[in-house]
Each structure stands twice: as structure tokens, then as C-alpha cells.
Image 1 (tube, one colour):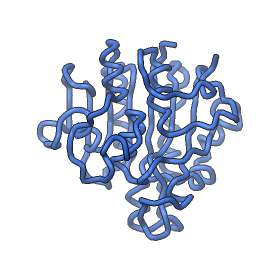
Image 2: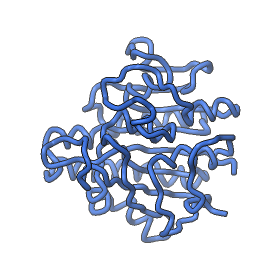
Image 3: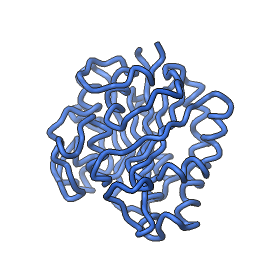
Image 4: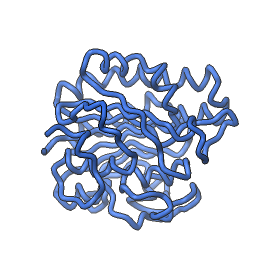
Length: 269
């Protein structure tokens, strides 16, 4: 396979909220254009450790990125590194911790907020450092990167759902409505990506609890959605994807060499 891939990681989005409230994505599923899986995140259920897990295929307890204050470059080979090694083009519109993991640490806003550097694993980036940075702006950043640079792999990572969860908790209108608004905003871009043949993954790093936090093993903290869209997915309801398989799955979609754990059942034969 040699497909272009868009990975959307909606920070802090619990499975049940996605299942119940994301009507556009669920509409794609009902029409047979997408599939939704319930996936369990690795532990601890924290953001920076799980960015590392999703993007490298390595558990936090093995990567050493076990809490959000580990400010250093990743010691693992990420999907950005694999893509660059194969000559593919990379881009990300994401929270600044992603820049710190794969490009430069610590993050310096004046230097790193807008990144265009072919020597870096993430060649083209728009990074933000305020949790309330609007999701619709972030999606626009991602679409501009896509149109301007035509990356083979594009990461889009919005933060407003997680921010609302920390402010108001799992069982709040604010949290649920932030997820619904993102579903609405995403609907402006997905039809074009689908038409142009992108393989699209929409998922989350972790969920949220009623205490306005996450870290542990409660189902609402660990269970996250995985929507997959595109002809190179099998859409097999028995695929049972795991979070640490996503890096390998993306590598196979891109057609780049890798030694990561993958999931053959999730991919079309």
C-alpha cells in the first residue's frame, strides 16, 4: 500500500461521548463509509505518554514517557521518523508536546510554532501551546498544511475536548458539546479527504472521569474511539485494534518499512 494518511487525535475524548454525540462520523458508519471500534488506551492514561504510544507503538512503561512532565525528545522511532526514512513528507497541526517529542525540546514558541524544516522528523508544523486554542482554528491549520505541502502523513491534534473535561468533568454539557462541535467542524473537511483517497483515522489518546481528570484504569478513562475511513481498511468488526498497533498500521498504509506491532485484521487484504 502507498496511501496518504490523516491521523486525527482528539485529546481527552471518551468512547461513550464519541459514540453518542458524533453524529457525522456515526453517519459515515451507518452509510458504510467508516467503521467505529472501541479501543482501550495504554497506561497511565495521560496525554504525553499516549502521544508517544500512538506515534511510536511503544507502551509508556517501556518508552519512559510516563507522565506529562517528561520534557525530552523521544528515544523511540516514530511514524514521522519511519516516513522520513522512506522519503515521505510529514506534517502536524498539534499541541507543542508533539514538537517536543519528535522535533526539538524544549519547545520555544518563536522558533517552533511555525515549522518548515526538511531536516526534522515533522517537516511542516503548526504547534500551539494554549489548551483553549480553538479546534476550528486547529483544523484550519491542518488543512492549510495539507494543501500547501501535500504531506504523505498528516497529524491533526485538537485539545478543546480535553480542556472542557478538565474544567467541567465527564458528565457535563460543556464536555459533551465540545465533542459535538468538533464532529461538526470535521465534517467540513472529511468529504474532501475521502474524495481524494486519504486513509483517515480518528481516535483519542485517553478519556475523562467525573473528577475532571484521567490517569487510571476506569473504563471512562481508558476506553477511546477509533474511527477508520478508507478503502485500505478491512472494516472487519472483529479486528479488535489496540492503541500500540496504530503506528504499525499507519506505516503499512504509507507503504514504509517498519518493525512495529500492527493489526492485519484492521487492514484490507
